[in-house]
Image (cartoon, rainbow, N blue to C red; front, side, top):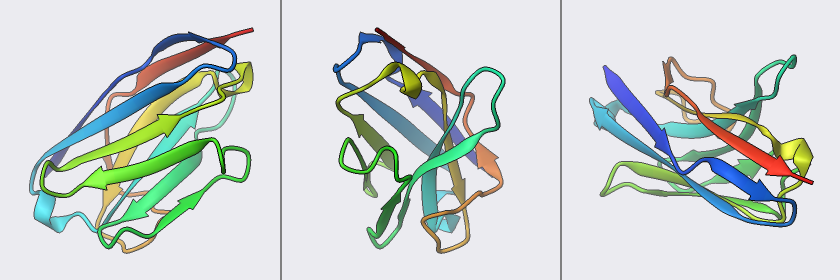
Length: 120
């Protein structure tokens, strides 16, 4: 089993920045890729960015160039640096992890989510 805990959400003005963290614990050696998802009110949960254990990354088109995903394998922690935030980025952000080697992973493990609110 793997446990995921997100942190770093909050309220920020449009154009601002936030950095999310996701700390993994448990059977972390089994994780091949991790990803960030988000879910806005009334919308489906969507994949935002993903990273493999080897460091390959991929991004949702609307966040590419503004968001940066990274991970510290030694600390079993994944990050999402979010810059130039807009109100459209407002959502609950979830950490995800699994055993598939794919940046677009939708693994079996989920965090509890952290709220990001961008005011105009």
